[in-house]
Amino acid sequence: MADKVVALKIKKTDEALKELQKKIKETKEYAAYQKDFKKIAALIQVSYADDAGEDGRFYLYDLAILIDAYSRADTEKAKEILSIFTKFFGNGKDGYANRYNLSYLEAQQEKTTGPLAHFIIAIANYTEASGDKTYLPVAENIAQYLKEEFWVNKDKVFRFTNDKSAYN
Image 1: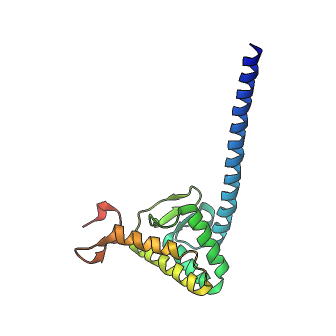
Image 2: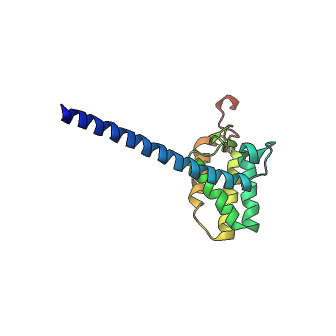
């Protein structure tokens, strides 16, 4: 009987330890996210959103223009934006939405060809200015995504949006 009690206490202690380790991991991840959020929010306070820096809303087109501008003036800032953006929103294989909310790490609008094309150009300009080829695969992924999701082969044109309700 005592062995069962000891085994039960050990099991409960192990479960509590695992739960504590999970909470510590989540706290560390959140702290890392907050650090990156503050960095990128400080770098992208240019947007049509009324309070892009405070609320964390930004548009992909604005981000591309900003990366392009930093590529000509301060490649380290451009690299930091690209690093954090791709960390938060992936490698471009699924394209990127027109607008994001960094506070919730969520896309808030459909995907359209223009901002995606501008993002490819921004990466190309960053690569040319810095010599850093780290983000070329992201540009290639976006280009492949555009081809797969927006190209209308019979008409030899790109659709403007991936919003099926807006298709002609």
